[in-house]
Length: 151
Image (cartoon, rainbow, N blue to C red; front, side, top):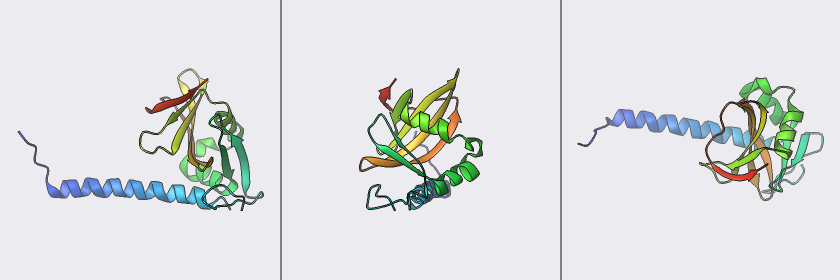
């Protein structure tokens, strides 16, 4: 027996998926555009006064985080991360595990155990050997994806 799904329902679902993709694209563009005049890939640059921190990861790529984008993360996306810059740097430089995103091969998830069954996750996008932080948050579950590196 074949299930028949009404066209308006399919249209609604596609609209929801498109809205999520557009929101994700806007966030990535904000992150990328906030990286002002130091060359970081794709011809983009960042000034030192806009740079909050640089971190070299075990994947041998440097992650750049601007002051403006850190404010987006801590004021809009995950306010719980306010004041946690050092913890994020440690998660990127000394993670317990790194996984590749199942949906985007240029996105990597870094996990560092904080306490039993509680990790900090830092998600980055890698571009031409360098990259930028997409978001970071505490979590009680590690997402699926190819394991690239373990402590």
